Image (cartoon, rainbow, N blue to C red; front, side, top):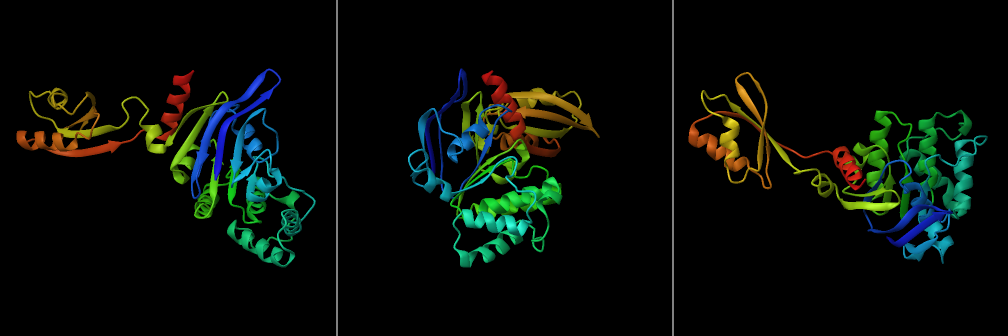
Length: 310
């Protein structure tokens, strides 16, 4: 649904986006992440036709962004970081206006407005003035205008900005439902949001793509990747860390404190060592209280990848 090759944007001597390549398929929700000034918003604006590219190509829903911009705009729903609202209008007036601009057939406009207002939690708010709304509710209206024409592709820049935790959960479920029949690119600084919604993420920094992988793939790039927390009952005159570390499948063991007579061990291994550790414990007649597998979170992966590149 989205294909980008060598996309570049230069502002004078500043290279904002530097020859990036990526693809997003139908039904995918892909997180677009990176530090401030990385080039995320610039890329989104090029994909939606808001600004021209300096070089490269991009297609959205089968249309060339630069040769067929109107066809691309008909296929896209776009929520910028600050929703484009006319604050003197009511919600109903604004959404009807957007429906007209988006070429929704006249006989369908009222039905589409009611549907999207229900979907984003604004039912019964048709007469509320946009200028009187809180930031969170303005964000909901922004989402409503992005989907009122039932687009094939959604490009969302900070879609849950200003929402409270309860509202975030509702909007995330809504976005997840939208992706069943659409392609979604989601830019956000809330990495837990990417973990909740996306299976894949693209990390951009300094205008270049530093990583594009599944979330598990990104997490696995942090040091040795997966770690295991083991708790074995203290055994007199036995160095449990050394005993576990002697196993062939174990790469590294570090003590992780002792509580209630159980020694904690932080185990690193290239493959799952829990079966081998359980066999050792059974053979020796020791007692084990816990064996837990821990994946690094996306924030750890993000910081590791950005700092590593720098």
